[in-house]
Image 1 (tube, rainbow, N blue to C red):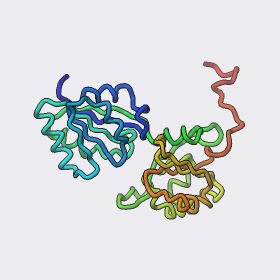
Image 2: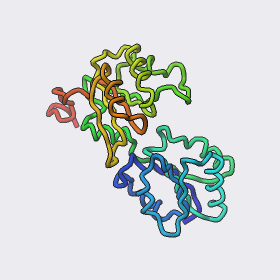
Image 3: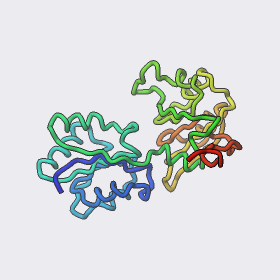
Length: 248
């Protein structure tokens, strides 16, 4: 197998949610770098005994890419494990830029996002006919800025299903922005902590009570905030997919 670098979506937490392709690459990898603050270490148990395993939570970009470049020079296969799916807040763009500059080939292996694991934990559908057909994936502005047109207040005006990442520690600001943007206080809301992990926590409430619920739980990180009518009780409307008159 030629020396290559793989950015792998390691899923939300449960090792059984790894894709088959991701698992197969991990089983052949010579070097594994994984985000130990977010990726379940059990995922690394699929690696061969010879594999060098590095935790990346304390590494800088330069230190991480140095490990990758040295491994490639030695003809080794590198598996860079990212939590969830690499395309959503995966911070892989700057890593790929270094590899592009060096002319090193790489591949991205998609994974199960924590958003979908959270929806599964809530036993809900994100896109419900007559309630919501749009999902907005975003975050609250903190140390990392967001484009002015994409702040929560502006996005809230759409009244779509909303998944807010990396913002549990800013819950008061999140709720204030959503209410200022037009969401009614009674809008259903939920927080899912460590979706698919053994210590998963699911909170169901509404915007008016969301701050109180989150503070009472002690949740401050590794949690996804979901807001929208899709979280209300099971819909009584039916999609046209199962309608006899619908042409398939």
